[in-house]
Length: 123
Figure: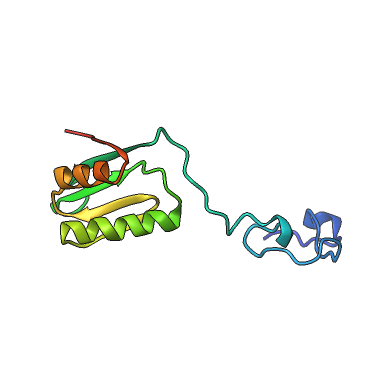
């Protein structure tokens, strides 16, 4: 059983303050300094890597695209366009575009046409 604290100092920090005005509930910074709404471009070498995967997917083949230097909103639009180009379903998870089926060459050609540096990854 944990010992009950009897003082505010034992709580380990600020409990309540009106000093900074309104704060963002996500990043806890003042609303003028909030960074939650800004588009963040992921750091990387700027090369989109396209690979075919089957591991951990019940034998189903999935083509993944990683390393695309775009912010989240533009990446979502690109994923939608690539899914439409391949005529299949897919998803966007943690900055990785997953397209159902084996479409490595088609995706490479489409990414190069859109002006991205793209290369085949894996075996």
